Length: 91
Image (cartoon, rainbow, N blue to C red):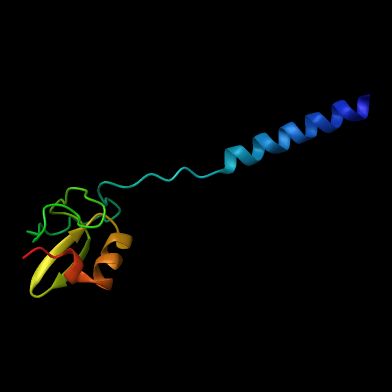
């Protein structure tokens, strides 16, 4: 009987320890990791064409396509845009 209680207690502790290690990732709205203020840029797009987030003039993930600068909320969105920019550019 003691071994069942001890085993249950050890399993409970290990499960709680594992549950606390799970990282919680949130989508960043703004990139504020840089200490210097990024230059304000006028983007050709007001909304990120990949995830539909509003673009801000201080976003660091950008791509230039046909002479226009496009802003993105993340490097993932920028990379997706670069794969096929014609799909996302509205003329």
